[in-house]
Length: 224
Image (cartoon, rainbow, N blue to C red; front, top):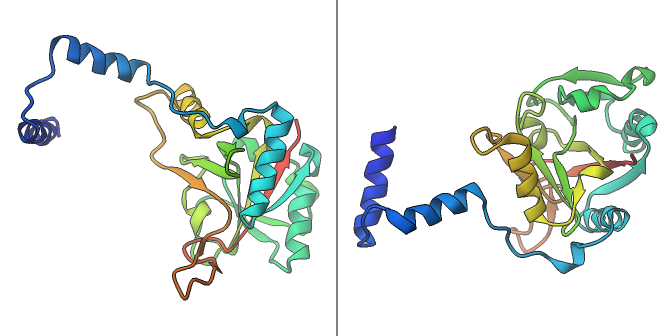
């Protein structure tokens, strides 16, 4: 693997007519990798925490997601209520996340939960989220044993439980949080950014929901 990488990088250097990095150039690269510079900051998302939450909810709804602001105790009941209001099955696939296990799912006697990765016949999934981005109403999902990527993509309906404390201003805040939580050598295999349900306008410029993933997204924003 190392030899193959060296061959590729050496080919790039030759095409750019550059030699091996050394001296100050090497130090500059190492310094940048050790402390990555922060990118541009979007002014509209530089808000107090409560205003970030409100802005996230505004943009999420603009992007065709539905949003409910609830307390932790109300999470299981809101999920059941959402399924009933939309005539959806009470059988769901849920991410095996310690965060989600903290809610009182046993209180919902009609709700049947299977924990694990998404399957082809799942109609509803429940996951947490690594972060929410106020700037655009985008959810950030980090893959791992507690969050199989398939739950983001396969079911027609995606229910997301997002804590207010995990809503940040912009994308640059997310990159910093990822580095802090995982470290540079232990990043998640996949980071998905999801802005509302899946949609496309490729056919006659008409928006069609559910083109490449869930056609319905419901976000529970949980108050601290």
